[in-house]
Amino acid sequence: MRPISREVLARNEAAKLAAAELPDGACTRRGRLWSVLERAHRRASTPEEAAQVVAAAREEFCAGCPALMACHRLAEVGTYTGLAAGAAYENGERQKDTWTAPKAGRQRKTRPKAAAPTTERTTSRQVDRRAS
Image (cartoon, rainbow, N blue to C red):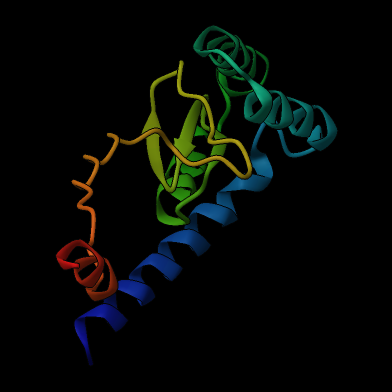
């Protein structure tokens, strides 16, 4: 069996195990409120706003939740982006509370590329005119 296949199978099994524990989660029967928090976090325009939403989710849902570790494992294994286990995640990696999600249609800021030097090209017709 190829190594990547083993990794995929292991990830799938871990996700199944974590998901089996989630029905006991504090957010299970309060999906609408959780969706509001997820939306608020996605729309947060400042790190302070994002941190407030993460703190609200942690206090309202995740503090003392019996499925906290299962939720964390599922977020990591499932490469989840959003709120889970009282924290923000991007592609399965836990982020700082102040992390803001990339907005649709925008890319993360990267270092600007150095401008390529421009050279003026001279055509053969221009050379002929100069020679005359």
